[in-house]
Image (cartoon, rainbow, N blue to C red):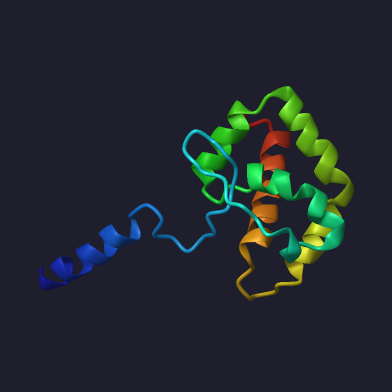
Length: 124
């Protein structure tokens, strides 16, 4: 019984908003505030996508899917047309971090790619 009382605060803390260790970069949605990314921390050939990474790079799965669900056909097309030609380059950049913690900019690009994949999968 003593163990339960000691473990309960840890469990409750782990469920608190913002308690996970995932990056919180992301898009402007009804529930999520955009994070300003530093273009200097993004490879030069990908900097033209920073505004999209700020918009779609949402680390919270629920919030990202909600943003995907609200996306207009024009927003979906914009993301598809911008990211697809450089998708391999984005992935190579993300892979360069290996097992180290990636900066917010890289995390936002990763979540942006995930948003695009969720759009392609037909989540709406």
